[in-house]
Image 1 (cartoon, rainbow, N blue to C red):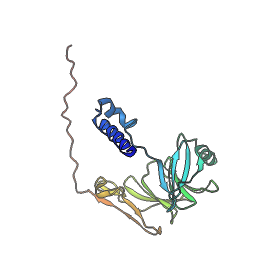
Image 2: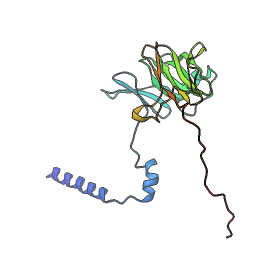
Image 3: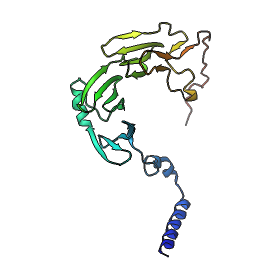
Image 4: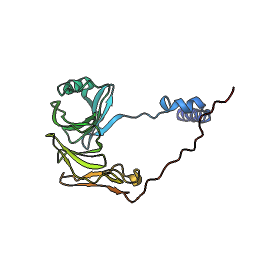
Length: 225
């Protein structure tokens, strides 16, 4: 009988919740308040059984099968490491992803840092030009391939940058997705797992003539009030 009463109470609450009217304010502001689903920030897999996430300026790791978690390092720890590299303090964690159990890549201001998690020291630093686009890091080759002004380049940790293509411009684009990320394609550069080859898209629109875009919007008029 107790179970039936409990079931009836839950059913009554469910019906009441379904009948509640959502206001315009709920629809507009609710996405940033009560209606937003709970999620983990910076979620990434460290290995097959351990994932990492950010909470309160701290990077945590947790065992998926046991739910046991522990902190890896804080934002303050990261600022101390980056201070030695001449990088200003962060307001929040930079984008990161794990390469393996002990190494992770951090990306900030267009530069790539490979960090040893245990020692909290940098093992690799690759600096990219300000105009670099579509960067893709390759761990096996220890390089970052990217496009710049419609040509393909590769930057290495020793500071050397190699230009791969020289025909970019005038309708030819190298290293960018061809058709606005259709078919699930999110980029135009694809490094081989071993770091020996780079595949990339090359779009040729040199046969397409330029044409004017006429702005027919009427000029602003001073209308009497």
